[in-house]
Length: 280
Image (cartoon, rainbow, N blue to C red; front, top):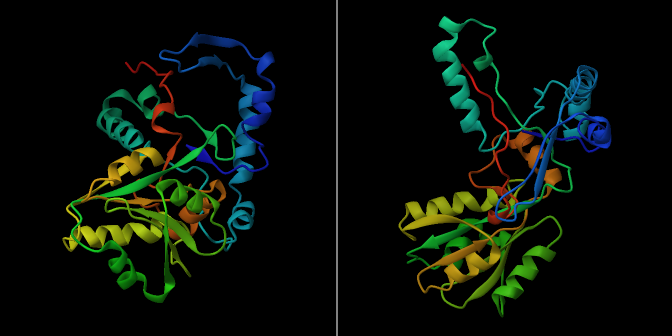
């Protein structure tokens, strides 16, 4: 669960006090995964964390943070794929609460709260790979976006990658790789979505629906996309990394993110699941 805490008022003060906390466990992780330790948080510190969370959730602070009216419903926590876990936990609770009572442990979910501004939390883009492409994707983009589209041919996949990473300004930039060894950078002026993925995903969906490609897959990593897009009937859409400051702003202003918007870290950097509870 992500919180938007640029002033680092909730989690970071507790982290600074780690040497004074009681250690619960410590272990090395498998396959080069690093090291993990867990500490107990006492009641006083827990109350301090709760107050800091409430301060983030005041309508005035929320409205100032996102530039929205104070009447806008406050969103303190943002959930990604963890929605599935919470939905399962809620379904289980609904199935047993009539027999176990309202104080039973299954009423509560165990979650991990992270500050989106934590430097250890890196967002990686999830690219789109079109298979069985029969349409001229560049012509389809021109038809979709009209004069708002500009397309620049480049010499290599590395040049596309560098162009996308260096892009700044109001236009949204992505890379187009394939079919074969054809490379381009595409830019959309006056985009309707805050994020590039929100601009390009409807185009990808329509292209598949119209038979211009057989299907789409979601690819982690620039090199993996470049390798797969080299096939003569595939085309890769290389999306830019998501800015942390843009994520929750888009959710507040535009609603849920498009599917497969970003990954927290690369595919080989995923977190281990360490803690759990036994529910009797």
